[in-house]
Image 1 (cartoon, rainbow, N blue to C red):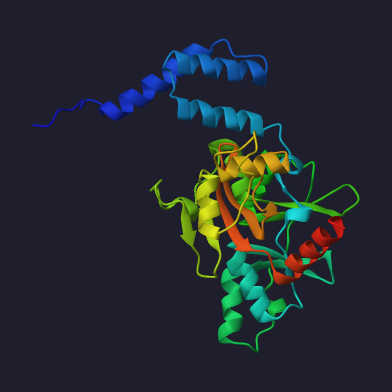
Image 2: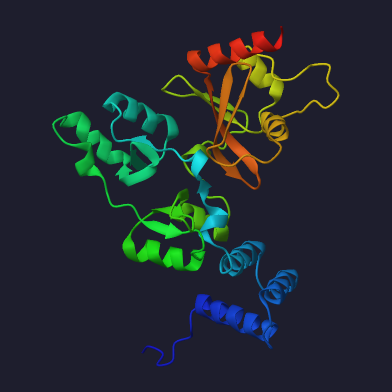
Length: 302
């Protein structure tokens, strides 16, 4: 005969115990977000919660006071598509940047007329008679002052993953994605650039002729792979990694989408994590840009 009072599962008991211990630890409640963060740190020290839980809870608390303007990708670094550009040019840009959604402008970059899903662009390849304009989805515009909590709720309810950020005068100041918001809670989100965990493989050849380079790759390794000189071998302030060198030259930790050019190479930040560049996309500087740089170099040498 079955027991009329079966024992509760160990998993349920453990969960209740965790919540009870956490509630007892923070009672009476903190009076400010700063005090709450300190309490969470103490809870971690006392093994009430683990480090990952504390970091996520702290991210939620800090996000409550953050706005879209603090997290957005600034307008100069946005990857936009021109509605009047040829299909081949659009396709190359989509492949080159690797984004899934693109703001589309007409005439001037400020004039955003919609959002294009990268997968929708493939429809034009199979049916050229289609209009690119018909494939555009409405763009969501938000003010710089919009709170991240409210924005995350809007993203969930409206099923949007990207919003254009405008300043008080209605001018485009940047864009923000749902990933940008979630990263404030869970930290940098790993994506396809983190598929390979083999630290011995630091430079990958891409299908478009460019290369993907790990930010921790030694500078000498990059110089050897691309046949260039990136820093003076006799300099006192030599850097070991390509990420460290570029961050020093730029004067700040590069953010996703930022570019740096040296020795005929363009380094584009693909992915960052933990305050450092995880992956660069490295490609030759275009001939026109290279010619201009060469011209300026010759003028400076006169």
